[in-house]
Length: 188
Image (cartoon, rainbow, N blue to C red):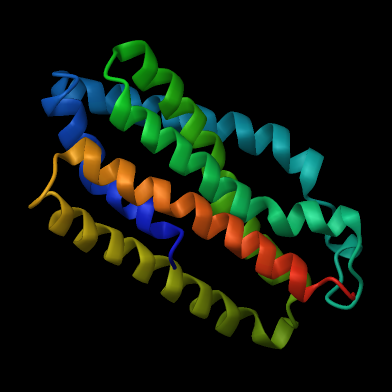
């Protein structure tokens, strides 16, 4: 949940930042979304083969270094998206908007494709629906909290400051998630 705070804040604040600080309006937002989509597409095509082993290689009872990179992928995705959002909030030039839209987009498949893939690869087939529902509940709740938090913070700060603050907080939260995950699987 805490990881989707930044993404939810980005959904609310990036259009405002592009309009008020880049002065590009809807055309700028369209460019940002296109760059983000291209980043997501490239990352999905390249990382899928590099990181996600076939379903027969994943097991809830066996844990290896190969598994570790797959299980870490969503955390890396959260960090990449946060870095992209921070850069969009701080550097107000069209080339940076496109570059960091692309960079942030590279993290989206790690967040949004790996989690359901892991649920279906590792989870018990009888529980796929429930596991997916629980994951989506917390992911969507995190986005809603990002929407609300971005609205609250913009009452006290500019949109770039609010987005930077939320995205910066996502990075240590993601690193803590990696730490907790590694600690819980240390003896597997």
